[in-house]
Image 1 (tube, rainbow, N blue to C red):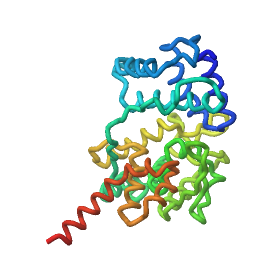
Image 2: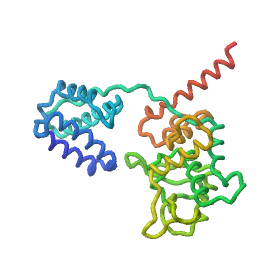
Image 3: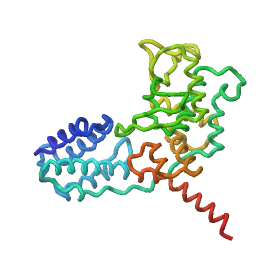
Length: 311
């Protein structure tokens, strides 16, 4: 079987049989097409050896993308994609390299950036007119305050926030279901503050558009929502820009993204005594290993215990 045909069969299985997201399929396709360019699309998949794969990974080490070298993490994604491909072929009795022979490059230990309680308070206070009450809050102010509170309250990924619809959110029960990575559904919960901010924003709107968070026209009045055919759901980039804007206004020096608020959500739960399995479920992590990036919190708590009780 040609390598290119093997990739096509695998991608079809990812999209249809495994029912994985289109984003996952696109990522696999990107990494495997790059491998096909290196091996040759017509190369027999059974003729690809361990040495060939190693040479491909060494080739990635010298490859530049967007003006810089590929990171260890990105090279690892290529190796993981090849492993998935060969595992798929092995299950279908296609002669090929054993997937377990492909080593995934180990990246440096991930450092999680999160906000302290004091920084979070400054961030929420930076949305003019909402908490201070010094001036009437515009619709944009209400929306932006709701975005910040929702990200921190639920630990949502920015893509999950973007796709959120009004009919999903139960403000009375302060909970809703969301479908995340791998099309896995989980329940997330709103704090009273987040539910109040979302309610204030939605009550201000006069449209019947489905999205919870909408963009506003730059040419319209501050409180006007762009409706009809021009209605637009906020993009991930727009939400990242909103978070960054208020982080700067709050005087927070560290880089703050929507994912920083997700990290802050998890860190707050663990600092307050939540068990890591519950946090894993609320974050929608498929593996506990992913959630264990927050063990720096546990380590900090152990140090505090040591300092308090070791005399």
